[in-house]
Structures are given as C-alpha cells and as structure tokens.
Length: 270
Ligand SMILES: N[C@@H](CCC[C@H](N)C(=O)O)C(=O)O
Image 1: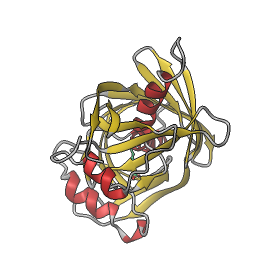
Image 2: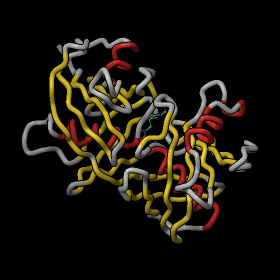
Image 3: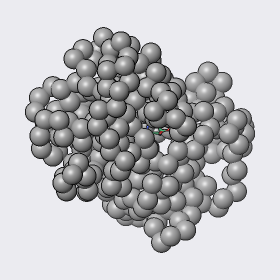
C-alpha cells in the first residue's frame, strides 16, 4: 500500500510520496502506472522526498509520467517546497532547501505562492535551425532540464503536439532529447507560452523550467527587464526573475507561482 498526496503547480500535476525512510523502491513501470490517467492516480510526474546527502533539508527526486527520472522540474519544485514545509515541526518552515540532480535549490513560501531559486542556466545557444513548416529556428538552454524555445505569432492556433514532437526528437537534441516551448509576446514584460514535455510526450498545462527558458530568451531578443510575467496553458500567470551577467549568461533565476494540494490517499497499485 502506498500513501501519496496529489498536488499541482499551475496545472502541472504530481503524485508526491514521502520516502524519507527509503523503504519505497518504485520501478519505472510502477511510476508509469501511478501517473496513468485511466488506470492510475493520474499525473504528469512523480515527486519523491528522500533524505538529504549534502547538507540541505531534503533530496528531491523527480520522475516523468513515462517513469524516467529527470534532473529537475520547476513546478514540481514549488510543490516539493510546499509539501516539505509541512513536514517540519510547527510553525511551518518558510524556506526549504533540497538537493536535485541540477544542484541544490531553495523554495521560499510567500503567501499562497512559492518562489524557487533556480540553478544557473547553461549551454545556451541561439538560432538552431529546425526547418519545420511553422518554425525555422529555435533557441536552446538548460534551466535544470533541456529546453528549446521558438517564438510564434499565433500561439493558440499552433499544433503543439506535431511541432513539439518534431523538436523533442530532432537530431540536434539527440540523444537526450529536449522539452519544446512555444512563446508569443503579449507586452514588453509579458509573454504567453505552451510546452511539449519530454517524458509526458504531450502538452502540459505549465512547465516551470520552460517558463524560465522562455523569459530569458525574451530578454535576450527584446531587452525585456526582470521580472517577466508568463501566461501558461492552464490559465495561470507566473513570474520569472533573473540577473543578466553578460554574454547571454544569467544568475539568480527565480520562478514564482502557485503550489496546490489536491488530496491525499492510499493505493494498492504498487
Ligand atoms: N514540468 C517540468 C519539467 C519536468 C521534466 C521534463 N519533462 C524533462 O524531462 O526534462 C517543469 O515544471 O519544469
């Protein structure tokens, strides 16, 4: 029997488990089943809380809906922060640190929102040719996980599944593949995005690391200042802060948005 909590961050939803005793060893197939929207609990991914190994409060593990582990998840990090803040003795902690494959991060509880201090982005590359019918080129950056970003004029009309899959499996991004984001400018400091996620193999309602990637390219291409507001497919607007340090490099990237508890339960699926 597995105890779990269902949470979502701006509509990107997760099964969260407390594995601080390291007694739960889920297989790829079990994670896939838990995330299955017809036969399981249903989620874009699974978050596991484990004991820290390098001095932070906790260790963060994240698995996509296909059961594969990913280095980081921005919306998941906000949910992880809100969840672990409640694990501590009262009063609820307002700052939680956790070790991810992408580095040690922190989550700060600010009213009903959570702000994540992200790792510094790397491997930024502009103007990669993809030669699709709707898009000639994308920009690439790793904001914890890999992200391609293409700017389009008509975001609602875009076929995210077709274009997203073409970019996700494009030779240029092999063998790891990439998440694929499409962005449209709303105002100087405001964009809207839609994301095709690797490991979900479809469009999700929001992607936190993807929002960070899109906001950084919006700054590079238009000079937009921090913070940049980002509208996501689920209807929320989140805020990305950053500090440019020259040569298309950035530090102090932050992601601020909601992290909501949905329900807790037990399942005998695993
Ligand atoms: N939803 C996420 C990103 C999760 C990982 C991604 N699908 C990958 O495999 O790289 C977010 O909010 O950042």
